[in-house]
Amino acid sequence: MRSDAKNMLLAPVATFAARRHWLRAALACWLGLSIFGWLPMASANNLEVGKPAPQLVLHTLDGRSIDSRDLKGKVVILTFWATWCGPCREELPLLSAYAARHAKQGLEVLGFSLDSPDDLAEVKKVAASLSFPVGLLGNPWAGDYGRIWHIPVNFTIDRDGVLVDNGWKDKEPVWTAERLERIVTPLLR
Image (cartoon, rainbow, N blue to C red; front, side):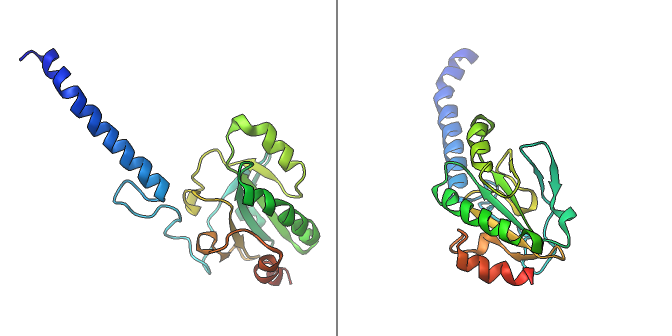
């Protein structure tokens, strides 16, 4: 058999195999699983409350870079959101007001938008109403915080740089006044 004829006969098989591979990968991503061994990839394995918080740098919309490690001595909230996320849009004004009220007590909030650069105008519009700096994350991976696969998700770091609230473990991840009072306010005293 000529190689051209053989390739034509095998092409549907190869296409089917490729489709099956991509369908598995898409399903794995949708479920928050790794295609390499079907391991959870939503949260980083070394992210642990009571241990030093991983470093993360926010590249703000106005061109600054804010390194979470440079904020030692402050209480830090890392918040991940997007303009198309309804619960995020509900949470942001509450978080912004809380951050403004407690800034003098050493609270710093860093907002990481998961929007694409094509949505920059909308991100800027939302960011203009917030009391904390915002930047585009750029991709769904947030260093040792893992792949951001659901939002909103937040992480809280104490004044010593220790992770005190792991957003991956929160059953109700949206900030409420009660959650802020319970988790963050005691750290500001």
